[in-house]
Length: 162
Image (cartoon, rainbow, N blue to C red; front, side, top):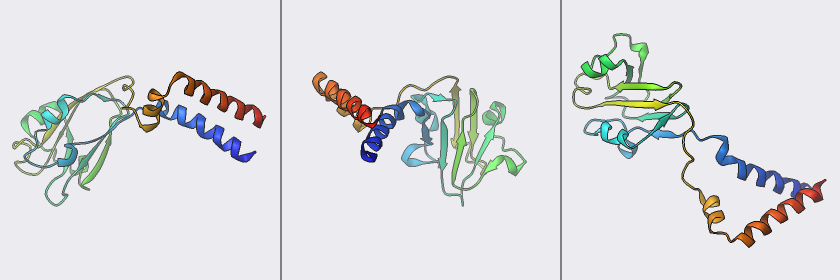
Protein backbone atom coordinates (compact mmCIF):
# COMPACT_ATOMS: atom_id res chain seq x y z
CA UNK A 1 0.00 0.00 0.00
CA UNK A 2 2.80 2.42 0.88
CA UNK A 3 4.51 1.70 -2.44
CA UNK A 4 1.35 2.65 -4.38
CA UNK A 5 0.98 5.88 -2.40
CA UNK A 6 4.63 6.75 -3.06
CA UNK A 7 4.21 6.14 -6.79
CA UNK A 8 1.12 8.34 -6.98
CA UNK A 9 2.83 11.14 -5.04
CA UNK A 10 5.87 10.84 -7.30
CA UNK A 11 3.68 11.02 -10.43
CA UNK A 12 1.90 14.13 -9.16
CA UNK A 13 5.17 15.86 -8.27
CA UNK A 14 6.72 14.89 -11.63
CA UNK A 15 3.84 16.44 -13.55
CA UNK A 16 3.77 19.58 -11.39
CA UNK A 17 7.55 20.17 -11.16
CA UNK A 18 7.87 22.16 -14.41
CA UNK A 19 5.17 24.59 -13.23
CA UNK A 20 6.49 25.07 -9.70
CA UNK A 21 9.39 27.33 -10.63
CA UNK A 22 10.20 28.85 -13.96
CA UNK A 23 12.96 31.12 -12.63
CA UNK A 24 16.31 30.75 -14.35
CA UNK A 25 19.84 30.90 -12.99
CA UNK A 26 22.31 32.59 -15.32
CA UNK A 27 26.07 32.25 -14.95
CA UNK A 28 27.30 35.61 -16.23
CA UNK A 29 29.61 34.95 -19.17
CA UNK A 30 28.66 31.25 -19.18
CA UNK A 31 31.87 29.16 -19.12
CA UNK A 32 34.03 32.31 -19.31
CA UNK A 33 32.61 33.72 -16.10
CA UNK A 34 33.23 37.31 -15.01
CA UNK A 35 36.62 38.38 -16.38
CA UNK A 36 38.35 40.64 -18.86
CA UNK A 37 38.11 40.03 -22.62
CA UNK A 38 34.51 38.81 -22.54
CA UNK A 39 31.84 40.77 -24.39
CA UNK A 40 28.98 40.89 -21.88
CA UNK A 41 26.78 42.86 -24.27
CA UNK A 42 26.95 39.92 -26.68
CA UNK A 43 26.41 37.46 -23.82
CA UNK A 44 23.20 39.20 -22.68
CA UNK A 45 21.72 40.20 -26.05
CA UNK A 46 19.74 37.00 -26.72
CA UNK A 47 18.61 36.47 -23.14
CA UNK A 48 15.40 37.58 -21.49
CA UNK A 49 15.67 38.13 -17.76
CA UNK A 50 12.60 38.02 -15.54
CA UNK A 51 11.85 38.95 -11.96
CA UNK A 52 12.86 35.93 -9.86
CA UNK A 53 15.79 34.93 -12.07
CA UNK A 54 19.29 35.02 -10.62
CA UNK A 55 22.68 36.08 -11.91
CA UNK A 56 25.73 34.18 -10.74
CA UNK A 57 29.02 36.03 -11.09
CA UNK A 58 31.91 33.54 -11.04
CA UNK A 59 35.40 35.02 -10.97
CA UNK A 60 38.83 35.04 -9.37
CA UNK A 61 38.21 37.21 -6.31
CA UNK A 62 41.90 38.11 -6.07
CA UNK A 63 41.55 40.21 -9.22
CA UNK A 64 37.88 41.09 -9.71
CA UNK A 65 34.65 42.05 -7.94
CA UNK A 66 31.09 43.08 -8.78
CA UNK A 67 29.29 46.33 -8.06
CA UNK A 68 25.65 47.06 -8.82
CA UNK A 69 25.60 50.65 -10.06
CA UNK A 70 23.32 53.27 -11.58
CA UNK A 71 23.07 53.86 -15.31
CA UNK A 72 25.22 57.00 -15.04
CA UNK A 73 27.89 55.17 -13.02
CA UNK A 74 27.78 52.34 -15.56
CA UNK A 75 28.32 54.72 -18.48
CA UNK A 76 31.12 56.55 -16.67
CA UNK A 77 32.62 53.39 -15.10
CA UNK A 78 32.34 55.07 -11.70
CA UNK A 79 32.94 52.70 -8.80
CA UNK A 80 30.94 53.49 -5.64
CA UNK A 81 33.13 54.68 -2.78
CA UNK A 82 31.13 52.55 -0.34
CA UNK A 83 32.68 49.05 -0.43
CA UNK A 84 29.58 47.60 1.24
CA UNK A 85 27.87 47.95 -2.14
CA UNK A 86 30.34 45.55 -3.76
CA UNK A 87 30.48 41.78 -3.93
CA UNK A 88 33.84 40.10 -3.45
CA UNK A 89 33.46 36.32 -2.99
CA UNK A 90 34.08 35.16 -6.56
CA UNK A 91 30.80 33.26 -6.47
CA UNK A 92 28.21 36.02 -6.09
CA UNK A 93 24.52 35.33 -6.62
CA UNK A 94 22.17 38.23 -7.31
CA UNK A 95 18.41 37.75 -7.23
CA UNK A 96 16.62 39.86 -9.82
CA UNK A 97 13.87 41.05 -7.49
CA UNK A 98 12.46 43.92 -9.52
CA UNK A 99 11.77 44.84 -13.12
CA UNK A 100 13.81 47.44 -14.98
CA UNK A 101 17.34 48.10 -16.13
CA UNK A 102 20.21 46.72 -14.02
CA UNK A 103 23.87 47.66 -14.31
CA UNK A 104 26.93 45.80 -12.98
CA UNK A 105 30.63 46.62 -13.24
CA UNK A 106 33.95 45.32 -12.02
CA UNK A 107 35.34 47.87 -9.57
CA UNK A 108 39.01 47.05 -10.13
CA UNK A 109 40.78 50.04 -11.70
CA UNK A 110 40.47 49.99 -15.48
CA UNK A 111 38.41 46.80 -15.77
CA UNK A 112 35.08 48.49 -16.46
CA UNK A 113 36.70 50.67 -19.14
CA UNK A 114 38.07 47.47 -20.70
CA UNK A 115 34.51 46.10 -21.02
CA UNK A 116 33.99 44.25 -17.76
CA UNK A 117 30.46 45.53 -17.32
CA UNK A 118 26.97 44.17 -17.81
CA UNK A 119 23.68 45.90 -18.54
CA UNK A 120 20.43 43.93 -18.59
CA UNK A 121 16.72 44.62 -18.61
CA UNK A 122 14.61 42.58 -16.20
CA UNK A 123 11.05 41.96 -17.33
CA UNK A 124 8.09 41.68 -15.02
CA UNK A 125 5.97 38.58 -15.42
CA UNK A 126 6.55 34.90 -15.92
CA UNK A 127 9.44 33.41 -17.82
CA UNK A 128 8.62 31.05 -20.67
CA UNK A 129 8.76 27.35 -19.91
CA UNK A 130 12.27 25.89 -19.65
CA UNK A 131 13.61 23.56 -22.33
CA UNK A 132 12.15 20.07 -22.19
CA UNK A 133 13.74 17.61 -19.79
CA UNK A 134 14.05 13.88 -20.37
CA UNK A 135 10.60 13.14 -18.92
CA UNK A 136 8.79 15.64 -21.16
CA UNK A 137 10.79 14.45 -24.19
CA UNK A 138 9.65 10.90 -23.53
CA UNK A 139 6.09 12.13 -23.12
CA UNK A 140 6.29 13.97 -26.45
CA UNK A 141 7.44 10.78 -28.17
CA UNK A 142 4.77 8.61 -26.53
CA UNK A 143 1.81 7.49 -28.62
CA UNK A 144 -1.71 8.42 -27.59
CA UNK A 145 -2.26 4.82 -26.51
CA UNK A 146 0.76 4.95 -24.19
CA UNK A 147 -0.42 8.23 -22.67
CA UNK A 148 -3.96 6.93 -22.08
CA UNK A 149 -2.57 3.68 -20.67
CA UNK A 150 -0.29 5.59 -18.28
CA UNK A 151 -3.12 7.85 -17.11
CA UNK A 152 -5.42 4.86 -16.64
CA UNK A 153 -2.82 3.04 -14.55
CA UNK A 154 -2.21 6.18 -12.46
CA UNK A 155 -5.93 6.58 -11.78
CA UNK A 156 -6.24 2.88 -10.96
CA UNK A 157 -3.35 3.13 -8.51
CA UNK A 158 -4.95 6.18 -6.87
CA UNK A 159 -8.27 4.36 -6.53
CA UNK A 160 -6.57 1.32 -4.97
CA UNK A 161 -5.12 3.62 -2.30
CA UNK A 162 -8.53 4.92 -1.31
